[in-house]
Amino acid sequence: MDIQNTQSQMRKGVLEFCILSIIRQGEVYPSDIVEKMKAANLNILEGTLYPLLTRLKNAGFLTYRWVESVSGPPRKYFLMTETGLDFYAELEKTWKELADAVHALTQPLDPTNDNQQTI
Image (cartoon, rainbow, N blue to C red):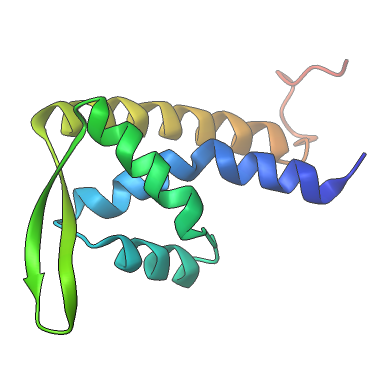
């Protein structure tokens, strides 16, 4: 089994949640998303990001506005819609439940806890 493939799949599983977490903080330009992801050690390519942003926009979770740029073409800034905020709230709830479950499963057995069962 290839550990890099497994690690990649784990990252892909939380990618949408992480991107929405960034956008939820306020209007954002895609290259800013890339930089924030890199800063969190979750590298993403623009070729991966743009199709995901388009899919989220088409689902009604994001909207965007064009902003004129002094140094080039207009820029598209993304913002979460009310539907997107509701969707994010559900994802956040699911993430917390999942993280708690994984945390519970990855803790060493406590020999003083009689309620733990060995399989």
